[in-house]
Image (cartoon, rainbow, N blue to C red):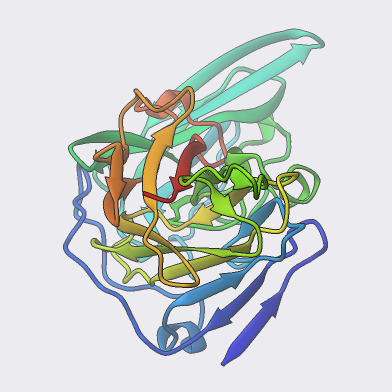
Length: 335
């Protein structure tokens, strides 16, 4: 058994056991995503991820600080005035149709931009306007469930700082199924979905504190909620997913929600119960409940299908080095 401890901003304990979950393929729009890639040899032998959140915790990061391993892209030379590089999945397979956007400012406050798409080799080349440059988008669109979703891309070297366009730049990008996109952001705002390449679920519940007139659907104080996510497809890079179990004790009505962040991108079966074995009803609520993905059906007792909520389906709107996921709320209650 292996335990991971997080900085105080995350406050989560992840415990690894020994069963591996697998599932059916999740196809990419322009390219079949690849075979298993795990963060380490230890991960390859690991099984379910169990997160035991204490009653004061408001958010957890189920995958911690690590990123999947990925191979280096082919070496190419810098060309003056040109931004170029390769876009791949984490196994090194090229991604055709990814969009990379650069904006430049030669005089403060005035920006101009240019973008490029990758070819069949995953290669892009942009002649960017002169000035101080930065990346405003880096995205890739793939099939997801019955629709499509845009995925934010990770810079291979982890750096998205500004650069002098006239000097040229080589910048390679990788599609990741999970990981912290912005470590400073995740520390300061750990609930914000864009700080992760994995998705975000807000688990919510109502607390029954009135012993004289108890509400039969509310969760009783002193109980522990257990959510299980079982992958039914590979992750978006083709790697094998792992079952995720999140437990949260209920001690008062003060904190009645939990952000479950950085969930690896795949299709899941989701179930909920109390520690005494009581099966809970699942219901998708909130402002995004009518949008694509989420729970299917929107309300179910026992088990439902879950697809993380995409932040959009246009590659040119996926912010560089950020996850392109929208948090959505799943309420649990006694049936």
